[in-house]
Image 1 (cartoon, rainbow, N blue to C red):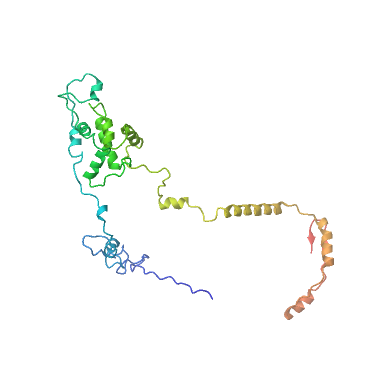
Image 2: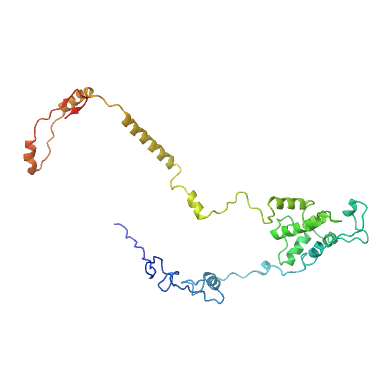
Length: 312
């Protein structure tokens, strides 16, 4: 027995004359007057779902499937301390070097500045904390934002950390007196010369400070482009076989069409043998057509003419 056929449920259409859209509410589609019911949670403008107690999906999940409580050790620490964005960077940007002359260019980078020479606040800030552990500046900035300290000083910098390090590198560059990039590398937990690597990587990506995408990462394509690039369904092994079969059939048909036709003189002996060996076959006839068969029962003569045709 054949399985019972599943009859699809008839969809209710909009009552508006000539409209073929499915109804949304009140017997009409959204274009012709249907008013979507909003979530009953105060301040939520999302549409309520029919099976979610008059709430949207997000609020319904919050009520029936609340998120597990966060463990105390997983909660980020409260913000603590100041960031260099508060005072140090603004004062460093407005810094102007002293007018006092120095003996040589080496005095600009080595040793302590002489009396009466003002130094950029960022340089003083890095030099005063050089005795701390590597990466102290990075962890201090994370604490000021309420983030956990890094577990390893070699971990990859986040975008906002790369941006801050780039700003500090730019302030120390350009012949700033007594600038020391070794102190900067120590404060970020990096090796000496990391400022060159960071600047080169950002310049190669035209100023992008976000993490670099993997070379094998595939960008999702729009659905239209996927349909354009889609190939016909079929196995990659079966398609070549079907193509070969079609080509073979076409070649055979071409051979039959182009084959030479034998003349009538050569076909005459074969036809005579066929007529001689053939015996009459009696078949049941309809009584109504017996008279017609007897009237037409005359010997059949087969003649081969010299004109190249065979007549029966």
